[in-house]
Length: 242
Image (cartoon, rainbow, N blue to C red; front, top):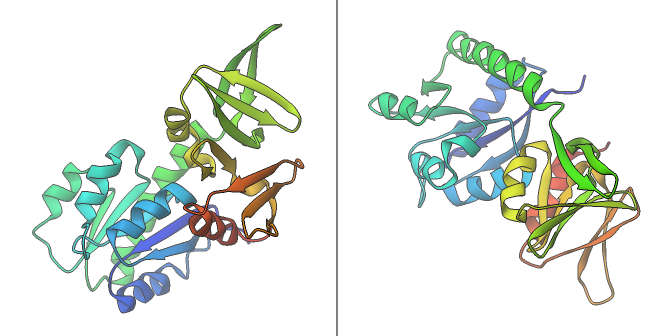
């Protein structure tokens, strides 16, 4: 059975991460697609894999859970469930728009209640985002594009160029702004000027010079910058076959 929603687990303690995995095991709608040990890793993973849920520890090395939300903004976060050994941060957690606040150790019954809340939230969100569209202007008028059919997007001056197979459309919107709209639909940065729909990647290959290139199902070849290579490869691998 294919999971509906992807989960990121962020905790600096391996035992705590294993505990969340064990608690999630009975709930087949949720699949763990990544683990992070600190806030910096969380910020990278949020950009690359666009999880639906993050179980977020508060006290982590360097960047703590609250700082993760502050840097990214609550509006750009997935559903957040704080998981901590301390109960004194609950009010602050809900001010940060967390869905729930779990104090370790978490009982199975308490965790099941959280899953019910998550399911309601994500089911409601899916109904509003599944068919999200982008309206572009063409020589024949306006065209409506489904985000899920866009293969990749590149910066083109003050515009973004959207590619669907060999067809392309221009949208007067910066790549950075557009990234905020499409990241939750599985797009990841390939390099400074390109976003790629990860599910559209057919394979990753190395050139003779050692550079990484994503070959899309559409046939397009998109170079992956050295800076983005690791996180982009992880996003493709975490997606799995399909």
